[in-house]
Length: 122
Image 1 (cartoon, rainbow, N blue to C red):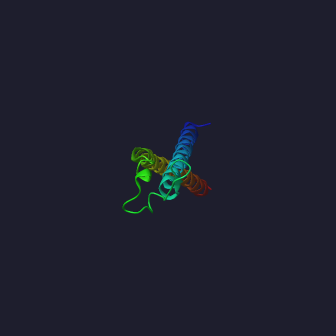
Image 2: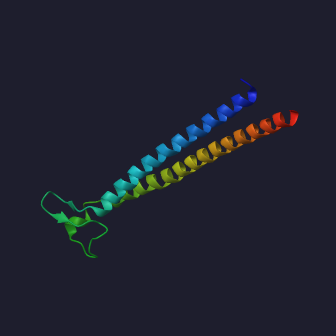
Image 3: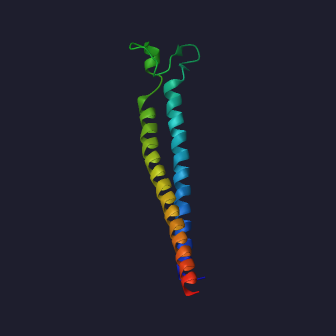
């Protein structure tokens, strides 16, 4: 195997690995976003008896029991974890996809250059 083929193969593998890690990060971020949406949209009960409306659809003046049940730091922590994970995942996935496209393009160029060289020598 030539040095060029080895370098191309290594480049392709790194790009595929980067794309896989980006996809994994996006899946984790999606899970965090879904969990945050669940906490904001779904109604909940305080102690099994008192039902509270969802945080997004709650009145301006909720009852005192509903104010203390869901802590803001939990949702802020989910947002703080989901947002960077989404950005990193998207960046890795796009970088891997662009690298694979670039590698494929270079392989096509090499093929057509070799084909033209063979046709020119004939």
